[in-house]
Length: 346
View 1 (tube, rainbow, N blue to C red):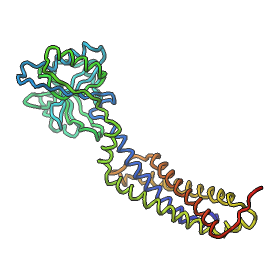
View 2 (cartoon, helix red, strand yellow):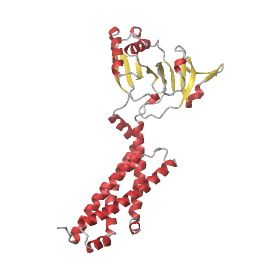
View 3 (cartoon, rainbow, N blue to C red):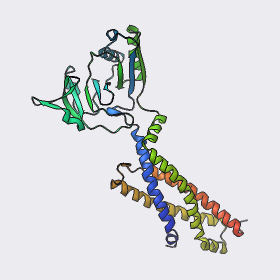
View 4 (cartoon, one colour):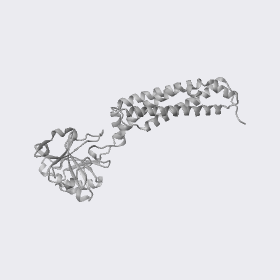
């Protein structure tokens, strides 16, 4: 009870630090994890393929069907192929014994020649009903709407609002996303096409961003929070030193009494450290509960939606290091200034 009475202000301080730190770090960690989510249901092993050519006559170029044939020939594996048709809003798709990850429809049972579409639930009003079926019109061609989907949030790229079946007669130029095949398989397919069409050029790279790229996205997405957190960490460090020293000073009589009954300097330090750890742990537990309740209440749902204990642990370790160093230094300086002689064991 004495410890609680003399530690109310430090408990209140650390509880506030824990609450804010947990919210801020949870927001940053959540943003970082979102950078691993690729658009349109693609997996982490997906590839981005860009095909271009300096050939002016498109009639001399291969078609998308030839690319698909080469991909099939190089590997017996199933794969999903997306091709950009509208950089912001839409893609076309082709499935080779593969499921469409954002849909529950069994696409293998549908005719490959049938023009079909999937629409984001938010644009379902763009579909036109005709003879009991719904159609989506794109570039003067009607696609039967087979399914609606709700896209998962991705900070790496835009989720497309519509997907339409791939026109295999179109020329091969364009940007593709491929899921299910290795980079070597795709490279071999393009190399085979280059033997017939030397002007064909391609760039192939993983769609999953690198660690550096993910951090860049996080900084862009959470810039204000990161700035606030950086400034706050500086003040937390300074305040932690002052608060810890004030807490030690409030217990001066207890420290002196322990010396009078024969306690050694390191005994006093260990006693203070144990009580400090108890106060710090209890305060952060209170802060964690407060942060959890705030997140659960959706008060900060525009900033953070998930409680992440890693943020809390990070803040706890930071305060633990700063506070412990301060405690050790403050007790040593106090010992030095007062000239109290430590009793050392022989």
